[in-house]
Amino acid sequence: MTTTSTTSTASATTTTAESEAAATRRPLPGWIRPTVWAPLVVMLAVLAVLWQIGATTMPYLLPPLPAVGETLATQLPYYLQNAGITLVESLVGLGIGFVAAFVLAVLTSELPIVRRAVMPIAIVLNVTPLVAIAPALVVAFGFGPLPKLVITALICFFPILINTAAGLRSVPQPVLQVYRTIDASRLEMLVHLRIPNALPFVFAALRIVFPLSIIGAVVAELSASGSTGGLGTVISTASSMNQLAVVYAAIAILAVMGVVLLGLISLVERRVLRWHRTANE
Image 1 (cartoon, rainbow, N blue to C red):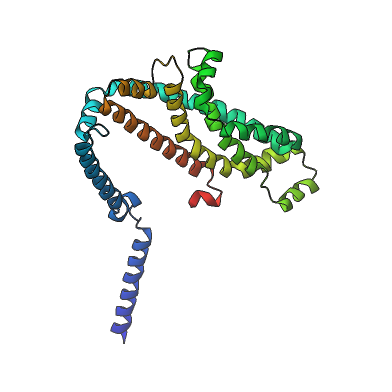
Image 2: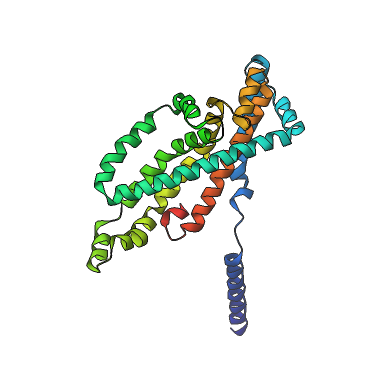
């Protein structure tokens, strides 16, 4: 009986130790698991094969991938310099659009008369083809970077305005009533209630407009005369000279820039919105 009891105790101790070790063992990061990265790798391989087939059958449309890689490798400083110009234009334009949209969103949420005056104009701007007004912006603001910043800001303006205004107005009425019962001022409700409640909406808009700002800067460089740099200018010049490899190399860099910006804003969102349930979704 004593031997059996000792054996049972040792077995229980071993099981407990194994359970504790299993509990403290950290799971592998998702990107290490083949089920996470293998489908993407297979898809990229399939797309590369299809690209090469297309480059063979339609050389006037698609350049061979080795040609794209060669121009990236041999002229990387040239591409990075122009990518820096486009990135600065996109971020500055995004900053201008964000400040203007956020201020207007606050005003429209607090003052219904401002909402009735501003929202119809914002909708008109959203459906207006900005490429068509780019020449007018050049005439108005000259041949410097200002027209590109204006176009980028206008492209980013509407999603930020709509999402932020929706977030500011989405506070539950019972919560508002609690703040009113303690005689909180409108400024206190705005700072401590409405703006924190709107942050998930703001980050949702930023996930849209960060990559969109890159598109806006490139569209501005393509459509606004007087461009002296940027990947849009590279694409325009290479297209006029039928240099498809250069065109697609610039497009590849733009895609990488968009993905990196989207990843950065998603990382910031997780850090800032740890308290919110959407940060873990």
